[in-house]
Image (tube, rainbow, N blue to C red; front, top):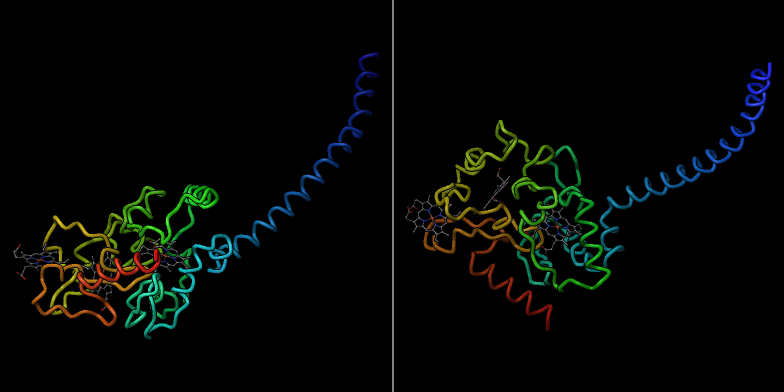
Length: 245
Ligand code: HEC
Ligand code: HEC
Ligand code: HEC
C-alpha cells in the first residue's frame, strides 16, 4: 500500500512539473520561431547584392561594378574605362538567358562559406584589410571549401557541360568549346602555364587573353572589351595607383 501511495504521490507531482516544463518549452519555442523568422529574412536579404554593401562598405565598389549596363562602355572595380562591360564576368553573368536562372547574384558565384565569412568579418572589424582589396585567385576564393579553383566556374550548378565523368572540369571539353576560333585560347598547349579561369576571365575588371604575353603577332581575336596581357597589366597598375592616390 505504501508503495501505491508513493506512486500516487509521484503521479500527482507529475502534471505540475509538466506544466512548468511546458511553459519553458513554449518560451523556447517562441524564441526559436522568432530566430528562424529573422534568420529566414536574413537569408533572403543576404542573397541580395545590397546585403554585401550594407554589411561591409568595401563591397559597394563591387555592387556598383556588377550593376552596370551590359554590353556597353563602363568602368572596372578601380574606375578604369572598360570598352565593353561584357568583358567583366560579374556584369556578363548578372542577367542571362543562357542559364536556368535568369539572374546570377553575388552569392551564386561567391557561394557563402561560414569560415570565409567569419575570416572576412574579423578582418573587417579590426580594419585588417588593404584598399583596394587584393585581387583573389580562384583557388584562394575556393580554398575555404577545399575545392579546385576551376570549380568556381564549373560545378554542379554552372557550366555543367564542361565537367567530365569525374565531376571535375574537363580541359578537353573546354578546348572543344572554343575550337572554331582562329586561335584557341582554351587549347592546353603549355602545361607549365597551369592557368586558372580568372587569369583570363576577370570578375570585376576587363578580361584578358594572357596568351598575348607571347603570341602577340598572331591572329588572336580579342573579344570586345577584352585586353591584351600588357594592357591588362597596365590597367591593374593604374587601378592600384588611382585608388591609392
Ligand atoms: C560571374 C561571377 C561573379 C559574380 C556574379 C560576382 N563576382 Fe565577385 N569575383 C568574381 C571573380 C572571378 C573574382 C576574382 C577576381 C577577379 O577575377 O576579378 C571576384 C572577386 C571578388 C572579390 C575579392 C576582391 C577582388 O577584387 O578580387 C570581392 C570582394 C567580390 N568579388 C565581391 C562581389 C560582390 C559584392 C558581388 C555582387 C555585387 C560579386 N562579387 C559578384 C566573380 C563574380
Ligand atoms: C587563356 C585565357 C583563358 C583561360 C585561362 C580560360 N578562358 Fe574561357 N575563354 C577565353 C576567351 C578569350 C573566350 C571567348 C570569349 C568571347 O568570345 O566572348 C572564352 C570563352 C569561354 C566560354 C564561352 C565558350 C563559348 O561557348 O563560346 C566559357 C564557358 C569559358 N570560356 C569557360 C572557361 C573556364 C571554365 C575556364 C577555366 C577552366 C576558362 N574558360 C579559362 C579565354 C580563356
Ligand atoms: C611564355 C610565353 C607563352 C605563353 C604565355 C603562351 N605561349 Fe603558346 N607558345 C609559346 C612558344 C615559344 C611556342 C612555340 C614553341 C612551342 O610549340 O612550345 C608556342 C606555341 C604554341 C602553340 C603551337 C602552335 C603555334 O602557334 O606554334 C599553341 C597552340 C599555343 N602556343 C597556344 C597557346 C595558348 C592557348 C596560350 C594561352 C593559354 C599560350 N600559347 C601562351 C609561348 C607562349
